[in-house]
Length: 360
Image 1: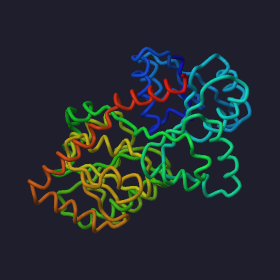
Image 2: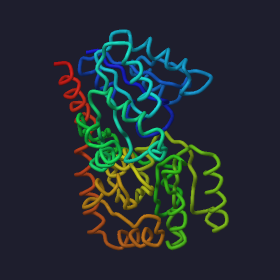
Image 3: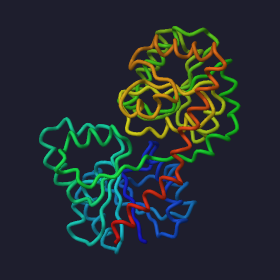
Protein backbone atom coordinates (compact mmCIF):
# COMPACT_ATOMS: atom_id res chain seq x y z
CA UNK A 1 0.00 0.00 0.00
CA UNK A 2 1.27 3.51 -0.87
CA UNK A 3 0.68 5.91 2.02
CA UNK A 4 1.43 9.64 2.19
CA UNK A 5 1.17 11.47 5.51
CA UNK A 6 0.95 15.26 5.40
CA UNK A 7 1.78 17.62 8.28
CA UNK A 8 2.63 21.31 8.52
CA UNK A 9 6.08 21.08 10.14
CA UNK A 10 8.50 18.76 11.89
CA UNK A 11 9.16 21.16 14.74
CA UNK A 12 8.61 19.93 18.31
CA UNK A 13 5.05 18.88 19.11
CA UNK A 14 2.86 15.87 19.75
CA UNK A 15 1.63 15.33 16.19
CA UNK A 16 5.16 15.84 14.87
CA UNK A 17 6.61 13.33 17.35
CA UNK A 18 3.90 10.92 16.29
CA UNK A 19 5.25 10.97 12.72
CA UNK A 20 8.69 9.98 14.01
CA UNK A 21 7.35 6.97 15.90
CA UNK A 22 4.55 5.89 13.54
CA UNK A 23 5.85 6.12 9.98
CA UNK A 24 8.77 3.67 10.33
CA UNK A 25 6.37 1.13 11.85
CA UNK A 26 3.91 1.51 8.98
CA UNK A 27 6.77 0.88 6.57
CA UNK A 28 7.87 -2.20 8.55
CA UNK A 29 4.35 -3.53 8.02
CA UNK A 30 5.09 -3.73 4.29
CA UNK A 31 3.90 -0.33 3.06
CA UNK A 32 5.53 2.34 0.93
CA UNK A 33 5.40 5.35 3.26
CA UNK A 34 6.41 8.98 2.67
CA UNK A 35 5.83 12.27 4.47
CA UNK A 36 4.96 15.73 3.15
CA UNK A 37 5.73 18.92 5.10
CA UNK A 38 4.92 22.58 4.49
CA UNK A 39 8.18 23.90 5.93
CA UNK A 40 11.69 23.58 4.53
CA UNK A 41 13.65 23.12 7.77
CA UNK A 42 15.85 20.20 8.78
CA UNK A 43 14.83 19.79 12.40
CA UNK A 44 15.93 16.91 14.66
CA UNK A 45 12.62 15.16 13.92
CA UNK A 46 13.29 15.64 10.20
CA UNK A 47 16.75 14.12 10.53
CA UNK A 48 15.47 11.19 12.61
CA UNK A 49 12.90 10.28 9.97
CA UNK A 50 15.43 10.67 7.17
CA UNK A 51 17.88 8.36 8.94
CA UNK A 52 15.04 5.86 9.35
CA UNK A 53 14.65 5.83 5.56
CA UNK A 54 11.39 7.81 5.34
CA UNK A 55 11.35 10.10 2.29
CA UNK A 56 10.25 13.64 3.16
CA UNK A 57 8.64 15.78 0.45
CA UNK A 58 8.56 19.55 0.96
CA UNK A 59 5.87 21.80 -0.52
CA UNK A 60 7.03 24.98 1.22
CA UNK A 61 6.50 28.51 -0.04
CA UNK A 62 8.13 31.74 1.07
CA UNK A 63 4.60 33.17 1.35
CA UNK A 64 3.63 30.83 4.20
CA UNK A 65 1.67 27.65 4.82
CA UNK A 66 -1.48 28.86 3.04
CA UNK A 67 0.23 29.96 -0.13
CA UNK A 68 -1.38 28.81 -3.44
CA UNK A 69 2.08 27.51 -4.33
CA UNK A 70 1.90 25.05 -1.40
CA UNK A 71 -1.46 23.87 -2.74
CA UNK A 72 -0.12 23.45 -6.27
CA UNK A 73 2.89 21.46 -5.08
CA UNK A 74 0.71 19.26 -2.86
CA UNK A 75 -1.74 18.52 -5.67
CA UNK A 76 1.13 17.44 -7.91
CA UNK A 77 2.45 15.19 -5.14
CA UNK A 78 -0.99 13.71 -4.49
CA UNK A 79 -1.31 12.84 -8.19
CA UNK A 80 1.53 10.33 -7.91
CA UNK A 81 -0.88 7.46 -7.25
CA UNK A 82 -1.19 7.16 -3.48
CA UNK A 83 -3.64 4.67 -2.02
CA UNK A 84 -3.98 6.73 1.18
CA UNK A 85 -3.31 10.42 1.88
CA UNK A 86 -3.48 11.02 5.63
CA UNK A 87 -3.39 14.59 6.95
CA UNK A 88 -2.59 16.18 10.30
CA UNK A 89 -3.05 19.85 11.32
CA UNK A 90 -5.07 22.59 9.64
CA UNK A 91 -3.26 23.68 6.46
CA UNK A 92 -2.66 20.10 5.25
CA UNK A 93 -6.28 19.18 6.05
CA UNK A 94 -7.64 22.01 3.90
CA UNK A 95 -5.20 21.71 1.00
CA UNK A 96 -5.42 17.91 0.76
CA UNK A 97 -9.21 18.20 0.67
CA UNK A 98 -8.83 20.57 -2.31
CA UNK A 99 -6.20 18.29 -3.84
CA UNK A 100 -8.58 15.37 -3.62
CA UNK A 101 -10.73 17.05 -6.26
CA UNK A 102 -7.95 16.50 -8.79
CA UNK A 103 -6.84 12.93 -8.06
CA UNK A 104 -8.09 9.49 -7.07
CA UNK A 105 -7.03 8.63 -3.52
CA UNK A 106 -8.56 7.78 -0.16
CA UNK A 107 -8.41 10.77 2.19
CA UNK A 108 -7.94 10.27 5.95
CA UNK A 109 -7.41 12.93 8.61
CA UNK A 110 -6.67 12.97 12.34
CA UNK A 111 -7.98 15.54 14.82
CA UNK A 112 -5.26 15.98 17.44
CA UNK A 113 -6.98 18.37 19.87
CA UNK A 114 -10.26 18.68 21.71
CA UNK A 115 -10.58 22.20 20.28
CA UNK A 116 -8.78 24.64 17.99
CA UNK A 117 -8.68 28.37 17.38
CA UNK A 118 -10.48 28.25 14.04
CA UNK A 119 -13.68 27.03 15.74
CA UNK A 120 -13.97 30.50 17.22
CA UNK A 121 -14.24 32.02 13.72
CA UNK A 122 -17.92 31.91 12.68
CA UNK A 123 -17.08 32.37 9.00
CA UNK A 124 -14.74 29.35 8.94
CA UNK A 125 -17.38 26.81 9.97
CA UNK A 126 -18.82 26.31 6.44
CA UNK A 127 -15.27 25.74 5.18
CA UNK A 128 -14.68 23.14 7.89
CA UNK A 129 -17.93 21.37 7.06
CA UNK A 130 -17.03 21.18 3.37
CA UNK A 131 -13.46 20.14 4.14
CA UNK A 132 -14.36 17.26 6.44
CA UNK A 133 -16.93 15.96 3.97
CA UNK A 134 -14.07 15.29 1.56
CA UNK A 135 -12.50 12.80 3.98
CA UNK A 136 -13.55 9.15 4.05
CA UNK A 137 -12.28 8.67 7.60
CA UNK A 138 -11.92 11.13 10.48
CA UNK A 139 -9.69 9.68 13.20
CA UNK A 140 -10.46 10.96 16.69
CA UNK A 141 -7.79 10.57 19.36
CA UNK A 142 -9.98 10.78 22.49
CA UNK A 143 -13.60 10.58 23.58
CA UNK A 144 -13.70 14.30 24.33
CA UNK A 145 -12.13 15.07 20.97
CA UNK A 146 -14.97 13.18 19.28
CA UNK A 147 -17.67 14.78 21.43
CA UNK A 148 -16.41 18.30 20.68
CA UNK A 149 -16.00 17.51 16.98
CA UNK A 150 -19.61 16.31 16.77
CA UNK A 151 -20.89 19.32 18.71
CA UNK A 152 -19.05 21.65 16.34
CA UNK A 153 -19.90 20.06 12.97
CA UNK A 154 -23.17 18.29 13.78
CA UNK A 155 -23.87 14.57 13.49
CA UNK A 156 -24.75 14.87 9.78
CA UNK A 157 -21.11 15.78 9.07
CA UNK A 158 -19.66 13.13 11.40
CA UNK A 159 -20.75 9.84 9.87
CA UNK A 160 -17.26 8.47 9.29
CA UNK A 161 -15.54 8.99 12.64
CA UNK A 162 -13.13 6.35 13.93
CA UNK A 163 -11.50 6.26 17.37
CA UNK A 164 -7.77 5.55 17.36
CA UNK A 165 -5.88 6.70 20.42
CA UNK A 166 -2.47 8.23 19.78
CA UNK A 167 0.45 6.01 20.71
CA UNK A 168 3.92 6.20 22.23
CA UNK A 169 6.99 4.00 22.34
CA UNK A 170 6.17 2.76 25.84
CA UNK A 171 9.30 0.72 26.48
CA UNK A 172 11.63 3.57 25.51
CA UNK A 173 10.24 5.60 28.41
CA UNK A 174 9.77 2.76 30.90
CA UNK A 175 13.42 1.65 30.68
CA UNK A 176 15.35 4.93 30.15
CA UNK A 177 18.51 5.80 32.06
CA UNK A 178 18.34 9.09 34.04
CA UNK A 179 19.90 12.24 32.58
CA UNK A 180 22.67 13.17 35.02
CA UNK A 181 22.38 16.93 34.55
CA UNK A 182 18.69 16.86 35.47
CA UNK A 183 19.22 14.51 38.41
CA UNK A 184 21.84 16.88 39.82
CA UNK A 185 19.55 19.94 39.78
CA UNK A 186 18.04 19.26 43.18
CA UNK A 187 16.96 16.73 45.76
CA UNK A 188 13.41 16.42 44.37
CA UNK A 189 12.75 17.25 40.73
CA UNK A 190 9.39 17.93 39.07
CA UNK A 191 9.50 18.00 35.27
CA UNK A 192 7.02 19.46 32.78
CA UNK A 193 7.60 18.83 29.07
CA UNK A 194 5.67 21.26 26.86
CA UNK A 195 6.26 24.04 24.38
CA UNK A 196 5.60 27.64 25.43
CA UNK A 197 2.21 27.91 23.76
CA UNK A 198 -1.09 29.40 24.98
CA UNK A 199 -2.54 25.89 25.34
CA UNK A 200 0.02 25.06 28.06
CA UNK A 201 -0.04 26.40 31.60
CA UNK A 202 3.50 26.73 32.92
CA UNK A 203 2.53 29.66 35.13
CA UNK A 204 0.50 27.54 37.56
CA UNK A 205 3.46 25.26 38.24
CA UNK A 206 5.79 28.22 38.73
CA UNK A 207 3.38 29.68 41.28
CA UNK A 208 3.09 26.31 43.00
CA UNK A 209 6.80 26.33 43.82
CA UNK A 210 6.09 29.02 46.42
CA UNK A 211 4.01 26.45 48.34
CA UNK A 212 6.62 23.68 48.19
CA UNK A 213 9.76 23.28 50.34
CA UNK A 214 13.05 24.51 48.91
CA UNK A 215 14.22 20.96 48.23
CA UNK A 216 11.74 20.80 45.31
CA UNK A 217 12.91 21.95 41.88
CA UNK A 218 10.86 22.48 38.71
CA UNK A 219 12.21 21.75 35.22
CA UNK A 220 10.38 23.35 32.29
CA UNK A 221 11.39 21.52 29.13
CA UNK A 222 10.46 22.92 25.72
CA UNK A 223 10.81 25.75 23.25
CA UNK A 224 8.23 27.80 21.40
CA UNK A 225 6.99 31.35 21.80
CA UNK A 226 9.83 33.63 22.96
CA UNK A 227 7.41 36.25 24.31
CA UNK A 228 5.70 33.72 26.57
CA UNK A 229 9.06 32.36 27.66
CA UNK A 230 10.17 35.89 28.61
CA UNK A 231 7.00 36.36 30.69
CA UNK A 232 7.74 33.17 32.60
CA UNK A 233 11.34 34.21 33.16
CA UNK A 234 10.07 37.48 34.61
CA UNK A 235 7.60 35.62 36.84
CA UNK A 236 10.36 33.36 38.13
CA UNK A 237 12.61 36.31 38.92
CA UNK A 238 9.84 38.31 40.64
CA UNK A 239 9.15 35.33 42.93
CA UNK A 240 12.80 34.72 43.69
CA UNK A 241 12.69 31.22 42.23
CA UNK A 242 15.72 31.45 39.93
CA UNK A 243 17.54 28.71 41.85
CA UNK A 244 14.57 26.33 41.88
CA UNK A 245 12.88 26.72 38.47
CA UNK A 246 15.03 25.62 35.55
CA UNK A 247 14.26 26.29 31.88
CA UNK A 248 16.02 23.52 30.01
CA UNK A 249 14.92 24.51 26.50
CA UNK A 250 14.29 21.93 23.80
CA UNK A 251 15.62 18.48 24.69
CA UNK A 252 15.72 15.37 22.55
CA UNK A 253 16.43 13.03 25.45
CA UNK A 254 12.98 13.28 27.01
CA UNK A 255 12.92 9.64 28.23
CA UNK A 256 16.14 10.33 30.14
CA UNK A 257 14.82 13.64 31.51
CA UNK A 258 11.71 11.93 32.87
CA UNK A 259 13.77 9.06 34.31
CA UNK A 260 15.84 11.62 36.23
CA UNK A 261 12.73 13.28 37.71
CA UNK A 262 10.90 12.43 40.90
CA UNK A 263 7.53 13.66 39.61
CA UNK A 264 6.19 14.34 36.12
CA UNK A 265 3.56 17.05 35.62
CA UNK A 266 1.30 18.25 32.82
CA UNK A 267 -0.43 21.58 33.31
CA UNK A 268 -2.64 22.63 30.39
CA UNK A 269 -5.80 24.53 29.54
CA UNK A 270 -6.94 21.77 27.16
CA UNK A 271 -5.48 18.77 25.32
CA UNK A 272 -6.39 16.25 22.66
CA UNK A 273 -4.77 13.05 23.73
CA UNK A 274 -1.48 14.28 25.10
CA UNK A 275 1.45 12.14 24.02
CA UNK A 276 3.61 13.91 26.59
CA UNK A 277 1.17 12.75 29.26
CA UNK A 278 1.35 9.14 28.12
CA UNK A 279 5.14 9.37 28.02
CA UNK A 280 5.12 10.75 31.55
CA UNK A 281 2.84 7.97 32.73
CA UNK A 282 5.20 5.42 31.17
CA UNK A 283 8.26 6.76 32.96
CA UNK A 284 7.83 4.97 36.28
CA UNK A 285 7.33 8.27 38.09
CA UNK A 286 4.10 9.63 39.65
CA UNK A 287 2.19 11.66 37.07
CA UNK A 288 0.06 14.66 38.03
CA UNK A 289 -2.04 16.72 35.60
CA UNK A 290 -4.56 19.56 35.51
CA UNK A 291 -8.17 18.36 35.37
CA UNK A 292 -9.11 19.55 31.86
CA UNK A 293 -10.48 18.03 28.64
CA UNK A 294 -8.01 15.64 27.09
CA UNK A 295 -6.21 14.96 30.38
CA UNK A 296 -9.13 13.95 32.60
CA UNK A 297 -10.02 10.98 30.40
CA UNK A 298 -6.53 9.48 30.55
CA UNK A 299 -5.35 10.42 34.01
CA UNK A 300 -8.51 9.97 36.11
CA UNK A 301 -8.25 6.78 38.15
CA UNK A 302 -4.61 6.30 37.17
CA UNK A 303 -2.46 9.34 37.86
CA UNK A 304 -3.34 12.37 39.97
CA UNK A 305 -5.53 15.29 38.86
CA UNK A 306 -5.50 18.79 40.34
CA UNK A 307 -7.89 21.68 39.81
CA UNK A 308 -7.18 23.72 36.70
CA UNK A 309 -4.98 26.79 37.40
CA UNK A 310 -4.91 26.03 41.14
CA UNK A 311 -1.26 26.29 42.19
CA UNK A 312 -1.99 25.45 45.84
CA UNK A 313 -3.87 22.29 44.81
CA UNK A 314 -0.92 21.15 42.70
CA UNK A 315 1.50 21.68 45.59
CA UNK A 316 -0.80 19.82 47.99
CA UNK A 317 -0.97 16.81 45.66
CA UNK A 318 2.81 16.73 45.32
CA UNK A 319 3.22 16.82 49.11
CA UNK A 320 0.65 14.06 49.54
CA UNK A 321 2.55 11.84 47.11
CA UNK A 322 5.85 12.69 48.74
CA UNK A 323 4.63 11.74 52.20
CA UNK A 324 3.01 8.39 51.35
CA UNK A 325 5.28 5.83 49.71
CA UNK A 326 2.50 3.25 49.31
CA UNK A 327 0.18 5.73 47.60
CA UNK A 328 3.04 6.95 45.41
CA UNK A 329 3.91 3.41 44.29
CA UNK A 330 0.26 2.67 43.54
CA UNK A 331 0.00 5.77 41.34
CA UNK A 332 3.09 4.70 39.40
CA UNK A 333 1.70 1.19 38.90
CA UNK A 334 -1.66 2.48 37.66
CA UNK A 335 -0.02 5.02 35.34
CA UNK A 336 2.15 2.43 33.64
CA UNK A 337 -0.72 -0.05 33.33
CA UNK A 338 -2.72 2.64 31.54
CA UNK A 339 0.12 3.90 29.35
CA UNK A 340 1.09 0.50 27.95
CA UNK A 341 -2.38 0.28 26.37
CA UNK A 342 -1.29 3.16 24.11
CA UNK A 343 1.89 1.58 22.77
CA UNK A 344 2.65 2.84 19.24
CA UNK A 345 2.45 -0.66 17.78
CA UNK A 346 -1.21 -0.91 18.79
CA UNK A 347 -1.87 2.43 17.11
CA UNK A 348 -0.09 1.37 13.90
CA UNK A 349 -2.24 -1.75 13.65
CA UNK A 350 -5.42 0.30 14.09
CA UNK A 351 -4.34 2.80 11.43
CA UNK A 352 -3.73 -0.10 9.07
CA UNK A 353 -7.21 -1.45 9.82
CA UNK A 354 -8.68 1.92 8.78
CA UNK A 355 -6.64 1.97 5.56
CA UNK A 356 -7.49 -1.64 4.64
CA UNK A 357 -11.18 -1.00 5.19
CA UNK A 358 -11.07 1.97 2.79
CA UNK A 359 -9.29 -0.09 0.14
CA UNK A 360 -12.00 -2.78 0.04
